[in-house]
Amino acid sequence: MTRRFPFPDPVNEVAARLVAAGVVVMAAVTLAFGLEWMLWVLAYGFVARVLAGPAFSPLALLVTRVVVPRLPVAERPVPGPPKRFAQGIGATFTVGALVAVGLGQPAVAFVLIGMLLVAAALEAFVGVCLGCAVFALLMRVGVIPAAVCERCADLRLGPARPST
Image (cartoon, rainbow, N blue to C red; front, side, top):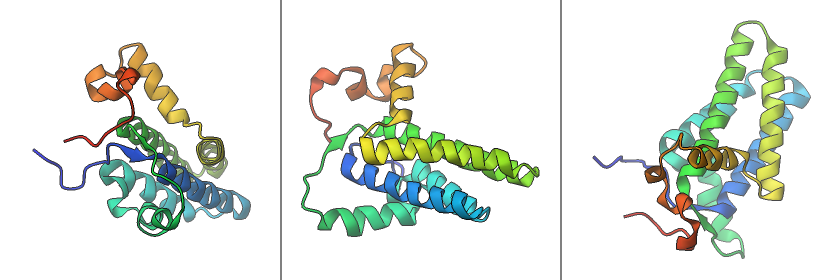
């Protein structure tokens, strides 16, 4: 069965880093102004990206349809599964922050968002995807089977290509 809104594979690394920069801005605003309602926006974005790539994420749509096409940089394809895993970690942190606020623990929520901000900043500004590193480690130890991302399991295959 083919999913109607599959997660892209490969993912354009340029777009991924720009989405991460957007997350940095939203997380920083959330923390700077104590905006608990912004947790809903962050959580929705991550959950939407995990479920359907950019199809329902306003930030990802803006980046992939408006910003990236106007940039004078070449696309840099990378495997999709690690990026989806990283989005899943972001979803876990943001939904966890919502739960913490719901339980009357806003400090816990803001610690989670602070951790998210650091991870997103590393992706956006340094090109280091912590979620992707965790994905690679889990593949190496056998928790994630090689079949989930054959390109990740054998990086000697060269640059990522769209899956058919």
